[in-house]
Length: 191
Image (tube, rainbow, N blue to C red):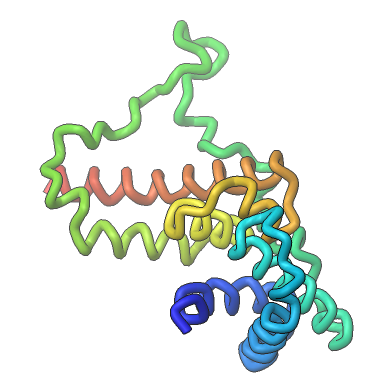
């Protein structure tokens, strides 16, 4: 039961990316757990148990989404910012600047900030809010990697991503979360 409690919320979020609503996502998670129970004897340990469970989930969700004829390809959940620069180009010196390509204004230095403030509840809310605003794929990749501590291989296998795609999604997500934190810490330090 602990494993169900631990993985359940993440499984529901991933399933929701492939099906039309929360109720169907819940059914997909239940079907995936049945698949896990039925296939446990055949588990060979070539991947972690968690990765294996998520592959069953993704396959179940894809099948269910196709059956509903409302499946959304996972790649369409990446967001519409894939052709946009990660940072605002105005943050760097322009062509006529002697420091062209370097930061115009350095990112906020958090090292002088009291630890209690950096790790406080308000900061966690800023992080959670920033993750909630991310495109679904970026949000799921950063949740699995940075919140739940999954390895790159586990995320790639569970979400059926290439290493390069996973790395790009994670970089973009971390950059946006960092931007939200910088904005928050600047406003706090100026107050």
